[in-house]
Amino acid sequence: METSHLHFNTSIGVMKPENIRNKDQACPFCERDQLTNLIAVDQPIILLKNKYPVLENTYQTVLIETDDCHGELSTYSKEHLHKLMQFGIKHWLAMEATGRYQSVIFFKNHGPLSGGTLSHPHMQIVGLEHIDYKEKVTHEMFEGIKIAESAEARFTLSTKPRVGFYEFNIEMDDSGYQERFSEYLQMAVHYILNHFPFKATSYNLFFHHIDHKIYAKVVSRFVTTPLYIGYGIPQVPNNLEWMAGELRRIYFME
Image (tube, rainbow, N blue to C red; front, side, top):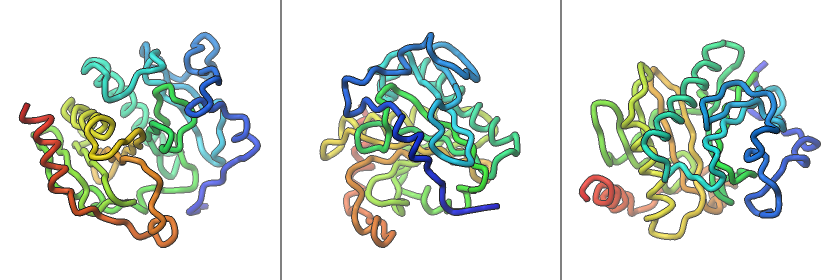
């Protein structure tokens, strides 16, 4: 049975803790001795079964990135960045390889406009029993203006963004982990949070495994445009060349 919609269990949803806006809410990921259903641990990184599986017909896991509640992907040391990304990609692909799911999604929410509920740095790996996300993926959504490229990875700014406006793409072959892939990804996140032409506090990170390549799409998040909400029409800004040039100037010329 395949379907196009995920069903959200509201009775579980109302029990989920939220501390992005509710600052008085204790952080469950900081209480490490209380965590249960651990799947894999590579201190300080932990993969565990999601305590609040709000999505029906799925297998939901949470990847706690660090024991620093105020940590952030854009400021991780290179050592921790690579350790985290290798860990996450390995477990994502391993879940995919089991063949138990139509597809497996791997993503991260950060900030009040990202759709997340907890501020402690984490990602999610979710097995979808009845939905193949790849059916809605097109190669053109990863095309764009080249910011940087090496033998290991490619870094672009989308000219045909999936939702609209600013989406950064990073790609590498799935034959093995490449450090440059994660370093480009970290630059995209750092740029959004520190150098964007207008204040940005939120982003999403989405991984895709398509045709023997691994893609990461970093999406700056603001209030979603009504043209996309109402009609599914993405908008492309007219300053993409300028922005790609700014990233090259800031991260590759200094």
